[in-house]
Length: 89
Image (cartoon, rainbow, N blue to C red; front, side, top):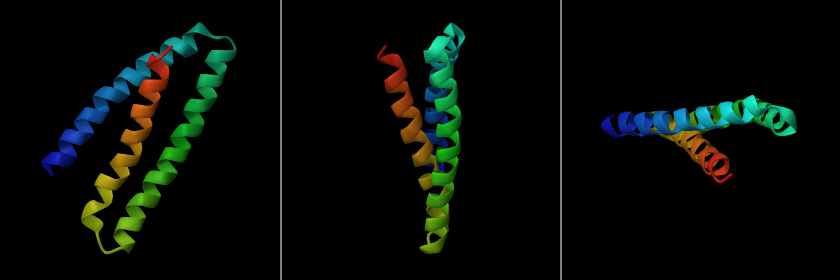
């Protein structure tokens, strides 16, 4: 449980960075701002669906204790990818 807690905390910090970078991009407006807004919504829906699927697969495989870790891994991967994408510009 401590590993899950620390991974969640770490992802939370990275997510805050992504939120800040996204807000700056959206605030500038224009085509890039609108594109980022749309991308954000699409990504959140897909991440939620993928995380739910990972959790369900853990339960179906008889490993319900891994469901939270696997769902969090989906979100962490997406958040880290967004941090990389948004901070390279």
